[in-house]
Length: 264
Image (tube, rainbow, N blue to C red; front, side, top):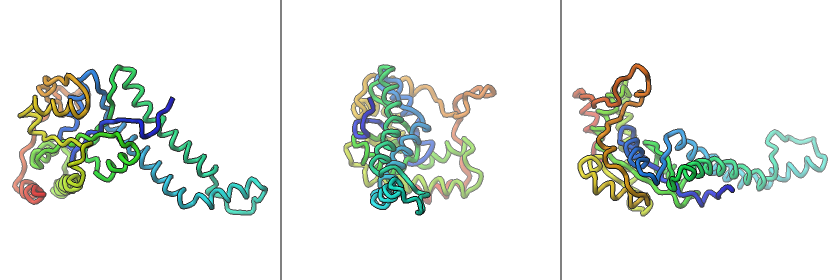
């Protein structure tokens, strides 16, 4: 049986930008027998489900009376009207839109449980605060793990991944990092959000992992996951022989751009 939106309890992993460590946190949580954290495609699905349902709900709140009247007139035999936007009754339509998206989320939930993993979620770097707050408004039991990393380290990692073609690309990346960090200051003290520092995860591993376990209500995260450096998104290609790419050095102009955006 499908749950209601309000009955799901996902863990969402995000960060101010890419190359902050969301995949590392995903791998750590998945190393526990209690958790299954899906990837970015599933995160986009969660976003889509909530955003479209919210849009339909707001739209029909305005149009319900006219929409239902159009349907009533048509079913009464009045066909000489503009019916390009004909719907079932608004309540019927919205109910089934919701059920469709709940069914999608239920698939994530039931599959995790079928594998003996009681906690599920998804990860998406740069998941902005407005989207998170909208998801929370429909799925109030959502928890968020926000992993922060110094901008310079993110840019060096992104450059090594060939994410930049021009200095303007670097500037846009830095701007997004700063914007998301500022927006998250509005919700950082919420009990449903845990902020962890990437450097703490590496340098103060045991304490940080204990925080993750407590916040996510899981046990036995494997600390040895931190020893496996896997940051190459193309590692599954047959021509690849490594799964780790060293951070790149920055030009002086790139360093100047990073310096410009490093202070919040």
